[in-house]
Length: 170
Ligand code: FES
Image (cartoon, rainbow, N blue to C red; front, side, top):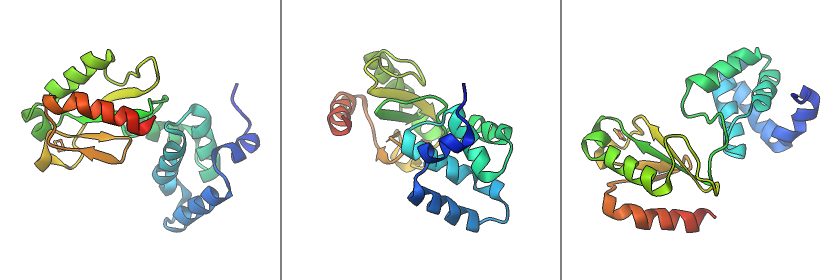
């Protein structure tokens, strides 16, 4: 059962975060235009965007819930389900693919026993194949938790890197 809007209000954003939302709203002629940054705030805080969070954002921005749902499902950068503590996004676009990205993706997938967009049973790692992350000159690369870039990857580096990421993020 979904949570009524008023009850959800304090659950998703606190007062400080609502001020940031208002700052976003000031940048645009229509509230709808703030959909992407407000959704990004939700994901940054919770790691994913639930259906209730989509309804909350729709209420906040005075837009139909279907609009928010459409945005979340269109852009692959938004997570529609929870991800692990270490979210590995491996670029398999042209430069990375030509430099062995699929070898790296499959190595990690086999090692962690998870397929694309799956999470390990201990909730630590999620693996995801993504499009170009703008670091083609240092291909192959992957992004971790939307912030860290790990570049010039090779199979030799993966075991150590996964161990480091696990100890750093747990
Ligand atoms: S192709 Fe991988 S970062 Fe651009």
